[in-house]
Every structure is written in C-alpha cells, then in structure tokens.
Length: 395
Ligand SMILES: Cc1ncc(COP(=O)(O)O)c(C=O)c1O
Image 1 (tube, rainbow, N blue to C red):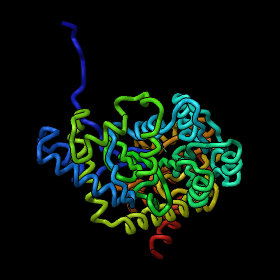
Image 2: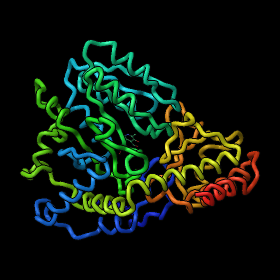
Image 3: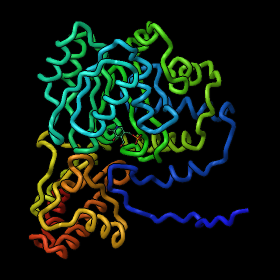
Image 4: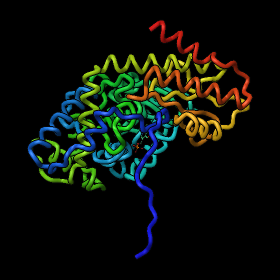
C-alpha cells in the first residue's frame, strides 16, 4: 500500500473579512456536529419545515416553493436558468462584474439567446440600457440581474428593473447571494419571480446550500416548456415533490448542512431582519469612514455601495499580495483581492453576517494602517481607527 502522508485536521481560526465565506456563530458550528438522522426521519422532516418557514421570513415572501437547493450559490444560479430557459428563448442579463458574466455563460448553455447589458465594473447597469434591450426583441422571456455584485461592491437597484420586466412581459430573476440577510431584499414587494442566494455570506452558514424561491407565475411558465430541462438534479418539478408535502425521495438531503442553515436562520430571526440590516449599514459606514480617513478611495459608484462587500482601491505604494499576506499571517484576517480587470487594483472587504461587527472593523483598520505605514504609504497612524470610532459614537 502506498504511504500516504496527510495532516491532521486543525484549521486556523481566522477573522473572515473577504468575499465569503464569513465567520459562523458557535450555534451553527455545533449544529454541524449534531447527531445524524435519516433524511426522511420525522425529526428531520420537521427541521425541513422550519427551515422553509424561516427562509420565507428571510426572503420576505409567501412563495410556496421556497427551499435550500443542495449545492452552492452557483447551483441556485444554474437552477434559475435551466428550469426556465429553452433553446429559442431570449434573456436579458445585466453584466457589470464576474457574476453577471457567469449568468451569461449559464443562460447560453441552456441554448437561449443572451442579450448582455454591460456597465463598467464598479457602476450599476443603467435602467435605460435595460429597457432598450427589453425592447429590442418581440419577446424576452427573462430579465436577470445580480443584486449585489461581489466582484465590485455595487448594489444594483431593482425597483425600476422590476417594473420594466413586468411592462415587457419578462420573468424577473435576481441573484441575492451577497445581499440576502445583510441588505434589504423583499421578494414579494419587489416583484421578483425567481430568486436565489448562498449560505456562506450574510447568512453566516458554511458554504453548501443555495436558498431559493420562485412564485407560481414562474412555475406555470416552467410547466409550459416544450421539453424537459437539461438538469435532473436541479429539476424544480422533482425538487418540489421532495420539499413539498409528498416528501418523494429525490436525493439525500445534506442533513448536517440543513441543521446548520436552520440554526443560522433562527439566529437571523432572533436578531430581527431590520436590526441585522442596520448593523450591516453601521459597520460599513464606519469602515468606509476609516478607509477614507486613511486617504483611500472606495471603488463602487457612490450611492450604490454594498454594506456587505466594500471595495476599496489599493493605495499607491502598497503591494496587493504582500499586504493581504501580512494581514493573514500576522493578524489572522482574510480580505479579498480584485477579480478580472480589477485584479491588483482593489481589495474586497466583506462585512457579512457574524463577520460584520464593530470589533472587526476597528481591528482591520488598525492592522491595515500598521501594514500600510510600514509599506511607506502616505498616511497617518490612527486616522482610520479614529474616524471609525467617531461613526460608532454617533450610532
Ligand atoms: C453574486 C454571486 N453570485 C453567485 C455566486 C456563486 O456562489 P458559490 O461560489 O457559492 O457557488 C457568488 C459567489 O461568490 C456571488 O458572489
């Protein structure tokens, strides 16, 4: 037998301030270690029911079909396209970052004609541009937008887009992977027909599930498709028979992941959505004030910045990778680098769920200031932390 050398599992305890995953609450951690039961055990069936109810609260929806897809956020994205689009359909997609681009790839794989509506990475997709794309064809089946573009820190406004989708008879689909549970999301009030998220960002649960919700209008359109969709695993018809009252076996639910999500959703319910969103707002405002007091420039278009993901331009004189390595090795803090055209140009600082705390904001600003002063950047030690403290004092 080959001699396999492996290390014993002993991961470091990090402060996760990157684009996700975020830190998890000890109750969520403990839930992962709870005893295994069968996935059709009456105990687990009740946990599934609770999870659906709590997800409806979080999405602010009455949609009957609301459940966590077994798979990461990308599985939610794929389910949102492959169940609704067929060859010959047309879809309009907002593209102002990595995840809009991923949507285009997903939709094209379904055989749909894709009309991308592009914007600079850091800006929103303009509603006027969305309208001219919707107008450009006789029938557009779907308008898809990323609410929180994790690669840039931009929050896409949805109200006008939703109206436009209705006006032109298109389904309105929204990615809320980096916004749900950290920014306001109101599926029913905002007229969103199909919506998915991921567990590892503002929900503060490990990665592995994609909370998903769809309304009856979209399901009726899905049922009228000419042929079965290309994915068996993500087939919403089959999945609704499993998550609905019938509990018809489809796949073995990831029991421990659902325990964890159940607990993370319970924590959100106990905090209250409104209070949670305010917490995210306050911490992002303090972080931004701190970074700006250090002379740094936020990247995302003002007025459309996310609270959950703060993108800041790397200051002159600082080495992107070296700074992030020092943060990790000397302070145990993870932040994210830029992607695609923003690689080497921005840092992405996540303040999501459990990670969005006053102490994390102050500690990060302190660590960053010390590192950047050592990198000979032109800034004064203490300015960032003091500016953040001023914001906290006011709130
Ligand atoms: C906006 C957005 N959509 C989709 C995804 C894909 O999610 P996952 O990496 O969990 O598959 C991500 C992941 O970061 C994201 O930020």
